[in-house]
Image (cartoon, rainbow, N blue to C red; front, side, top):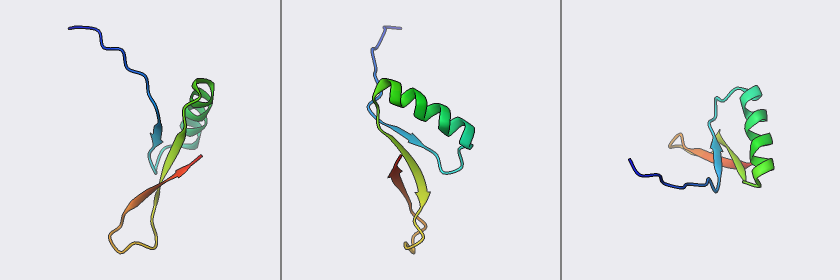
Length: 55
């Protein structure tokens, strides 16, 4: 299988991700200078949508 170089540009954390994991992901993302977003439930939507919030 050929090697494919891939670098993340953004990180999206799930709504139910444990805070200890979230903290670790944020530290890694800050070191790599990558923006981090957390998915949250949109309480104003009638379609039960998730939206993201920049951390």
